[in-house]
Length: 81
Image 1: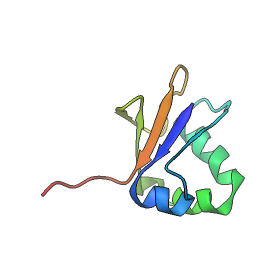
Image 2: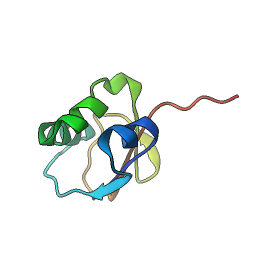
Image 3: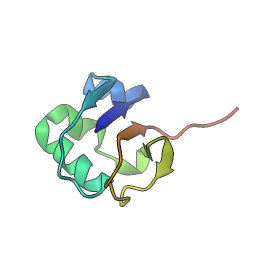
Image 4: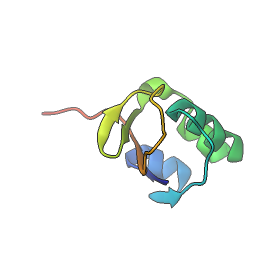
């Protein structure tokens, strides 16, 4: 699946996107796999409450299943103004 990173998440990880092979069943499982890779992922996902996730461009929760998902995007909450 494609994993996209936006704003400061992208800056901490150093990539705008990557293709990931995973056996993760949920978003939280995917985050745990990524954090186990390198410190930069652990730094980006240190506070999951400060992040939002979208699965195939639909907002989701971290306990959402990944079965059939082609794209996961991580980004900080947005504010309007």
